[in-house]
Length: 510
Image 1 (cartoon, one colour):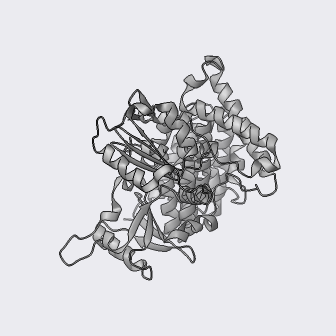
Image 2 (cartoon, one colour; image 1 turned 30 degrees about the vertical axis):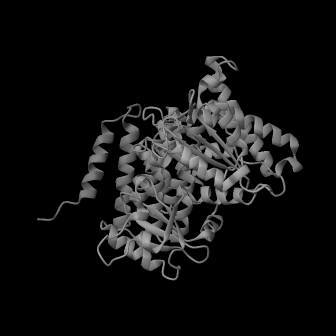
Image 3 (cartoon, rainbow, N blue to C red; image 1 turned 30 degrees about the horizontal axis):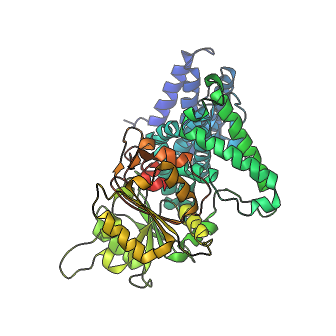
């Protein structure tokens, strides 16, 4: 007895389903799509050109029906992945559906990426990049940081960068595996960084563009923190339209800035060649944890990145990482760039902890960075030191934390007149915000409170009132801050379970 062919059965069943779905049947698009996939799969196995021709015809019929009923899904992704000319840019396919929202386009792009991965299509990375670009579009039309955080907490959204990186790693494209997560991680903070980016050189070229850009950035920042900031500006019914217009003004001004000499790459996603410069201060270990595979990529300032596949046994993995770092002097600084759930783990303290064996902390000095771009930007700011040297603003609460008096005495001995020390009643939120915008170094020794339900309302306790994440963001300016030392409970924690790469905390906002 001959064995049954599952593909042939699928094709047969697909034809039967279509017989019972006339042209106006709501399920016809789905059945056309499924039969097209089955025929394409059989073509790949048997090479029968008539199967490919029928698959193309069915896909085109499905697309035509989808356009006719303004269906946002299954519009084009099967045609893109398995049938169409790969020379046609994926984004151009989307332009045929102007009525689809940014979120609907994202859903389609994500479906395209998932299907392309199943079929091992050459379109996988392009689809992932498109999906992450559309994540940014979705964030731009969402009203507040809280709304954006909810979207980024969706499992399929938060896993998108790690999925893309794992595919790139699987195919040997380690530079791409470094680039892609930079586009898809820390998006809320990246947007805040864009709104407060220093414009040191722009005024000399175009003072008008500088003023317009600063103004619209302030307005978008206030609106993203809380819609109540604009209660007196526009009526409630028009706030969404107001934000859309402001974002379009921001995008249009950004386009004009990029047309100026020397500003072509202003606020653009950094390519690998730029990201690699982040390793100038020591090797960076980027860790990607994904359901498909998990790896560490070691990035040096020169040469190709090195790959260390992760194993379930941490000591073995760390041993391989240390071996790959051969040639780096002991007690040199190395940088960790973890992702996902690893963000909350003290990787630097890992080791066998057996007598006679060394732990990681005995070999290297570890530091952390949330993204490579964050490290590059921080170093760029450090080059613009105050000619007067380091200045320090310290705030403490010795009335409830007695050791603060000793701590402040030590700071006074170290910094002398360069330190401004505020204890308890001597400060309030306005004083601290004003000082934070002009002082490169901050030192907080006080109580902190974590609001799990709304991280924007986490706060430092002051003698009178509090200083919340929301207040800090509302008062944010393009400062030259370099160091924030936080001796405050809960300052480094946040609601990280749902979207660890987008964690909002007191430490992050500083």
